Amino acid sequence: MKITFLGTGTSQGIPVITCRCAVCTSKDFKDKRLRTSVLIETDDKTIVIDSGPDFRYQMLRAEATDLDAILFTHEHKDHVAGMDDIRPFNYMLHKNIDVYAAPRVQEALKREFSYIFTNVQYLGLPRINLNTITDAAFQIGASTIVPLKVMHYKLPIHGFRIGDFSYITDAKTIPEETMKQLQGTRVLVVNALQHTDHISHFNLQEALEFARTVGAEQTYLTHVSHNLGRHEEVEKDLPAGVSLAYDTLSIFI
Image (cartoon, rainbow, N blue to C red; front, top):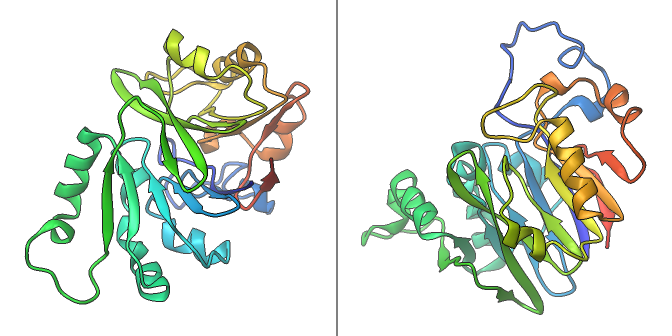
């Protein structure tokens, strides 16, 4: 399984265009963070988790030529705004794209993209098959997808586990049942927004404590704001087995 980080950033803490902080003026490509998303390529399927506002460019940059499914963690705009850009995949691949979302997220998609769901259909509309995520595991091709319930402040959202890979973003607290589901994870991805506390996201220290509890062989930090600092500076202070993810990073599991 190949995992490519399409984006590792966030709308949280994005500065104005005139910001002259160390991250915003950095020449290191690892400091150029688009909204958080990940591309998963298994032996038989190509899956994306979240399609934010940068989705079109991210898929072009990754030279992605296939797409079978999008999994949505939750309905916030920085995670769903790019769904319209599945159109080229409909056209090139001559197929609908499977979309997996919890009922509440589906209602948000129907509001945001109402033209997709009306009875008046016309050539060129995004074509999707809408599938409901519950707490139960489900199949995409040969892969078993395990929804991982986490709390984004008071909003229940989903992470996902596929085999030995677990992906969590926008988490602030993790229920005990989810901790049990994470046992045996070899590669963990988790959000680490900034150094200081935040009401709905792990800060760096909380993410590191969570990583230690899970005990994965390798943890990657994502959903990073510019407030966390430059990649090079953050990376050198991380413990063994923890790395700061960056856009375009690919790993194999």
